[in-house]
Length: 279
Ligand SMILES: [Cu+2]
Image (cartoon, rainbow, N blue to C red; front, side, top):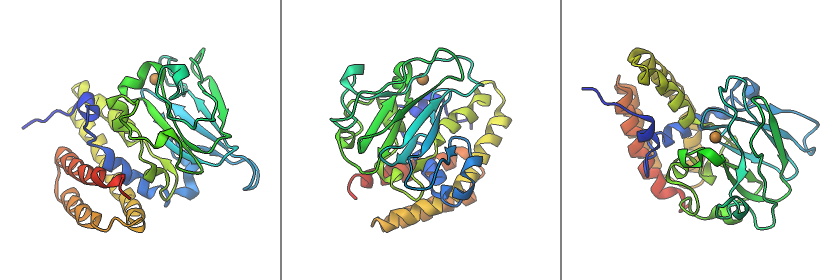
């Protein structure tokens, strides 16, 4: 039996089938923190010694930001760049702000910020964050496709703490990381969803074997990543998650079907979603 998983399904309204898998990726980031520079989307440019402002890079890829979420200190700078492999230069990084026809989801006293449209591929734009709180942002032409991101500056505060359905498109709600993820072991949210979409491309080209191989690779990696995020969840008091994760792991280790694994991830996602704003 063939079960097709399309981009729209993966991002559909109210569906977050790969959220937990994304979190699994997040968990292992700590293990890899010494080699962050080797990971796509995790390019941190070390500047001076610790108290000095840092510069972080977020890549604007085909319909997703990489990394998706980032935790920084006040005074740090984030630079958004378009990688050269993009075919078209058409993405922006734009704060959820009435100036850009969105509800306010950045701190009230923060300036409205937006990259505007890059003139050509490879252009970069930076913003220095001087206001603590959550800064939610989006791509002007692709917000409804779920091209959204989140910068946490030191503390969880401001209009960005409103529920995700306040001012964010359904697809964006399915992508935006929870603050708990940004407060996790690493503070950078790996964009699993974007990678899932990229891995799904061969399927659309009728190369099912290649797509399955890419999915299996993603899921196998995610298994490693999950444990550390689970430890974080325990640390913030969600003990009952353990049973759900055990059930999920049992499926992950016993099935050869990436779709069965995806369904299991979806079940676990639903459970965690019911908890995440109550901690
Ligand atoms: Cu875009």
